[in-house]
Image (cartoon, rainbow, N blue to C red):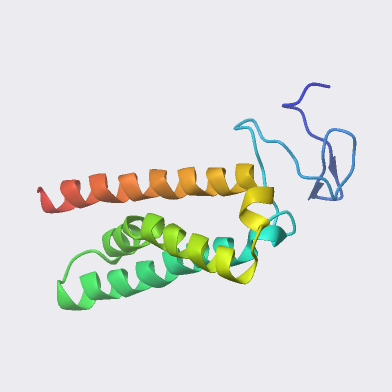
Length: 132
């Protein structure tokens, strides 16, 4: 069995050796469960929580104030502010769990790249929606 084939037991995702607690590599090169994110949970909750919070705020603002599409506002707010919130999450993570960023550098780097990608998508979407 190669790395792109997975075993599924009772609907739970397992690694290629059948261990359900292992972190499974996906075809994109990584897969993190909530348990695997425990060492950098402050950073992860800051990034994900802010994405939903700002998405909801922008979505409601677009819908009720600007009379535009709620989904555009949600996507723009959620993706447009995710990288700055990642940077704030880095500060909080280093303050409350010192040393955890260095020990989990690969995970932090991947979260940062995902946040940067979503932020760029938000900028492109803003330019497309507002024609700016």
